[in-house]
Length: 99
Length: 184
Image: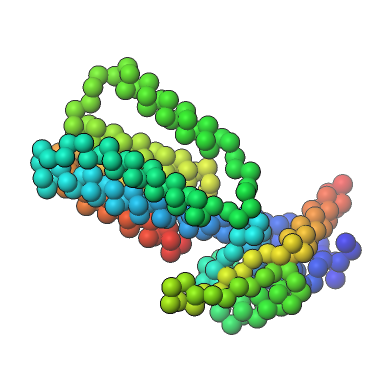
């Protein structure tokens, strides 16, 4: 990878991806919790999640928990791989520059 | 646009910090129902001998069984969809603590009722504190320290009120702690 993945490289999207990668595979994170972790506003977070969803990096599930509407997000297989590639890319920059 | 070494290092640091927060929040959401369940068990276990002295001296036996079955059921309900390779050191730590307690009871003189009433909460406090330290879950450590300090405060400062103290502060504290973790 010569260039960083532009989809992941954006700071809020990077936080979303990092937060989801910290969970076990196929586990979902609630939108509200993700908002706190990413430190983003609701609208901003929603827009970035849509961007990641369109790229196929995350999956979004909307349902009800009792009577309360709930939005949950999880990392897709492609998203997991893309994030790992992105981290490898960052590590390579550090290793190359340090060599 | 390629990124510099310092930018890459900073980004990796941010990733690590975000992942730490996310992992803690995930752990809290998994631990919260257990704390609430055991909080209710403490309220009953300490509340019954406080409100009905001399009755149901065996109350803790079924309560512990119910608690363990409840915790098992919660664990099964909340288990990850894909089985993860959990660190065996956690289970080894619990086995070591169990053996330590068993050895302690075998060696030390018998506890009186008040000592027994605070011994297990202190042990629980230690386990929460250790869990928090190992999983970098600051809230878990805070809860462990709070349970330990409040239990000892009740034992040394209010021994004649220990049962109501443990019912309200111990049991109630666990329930509030569970709710606090859920909101993290």
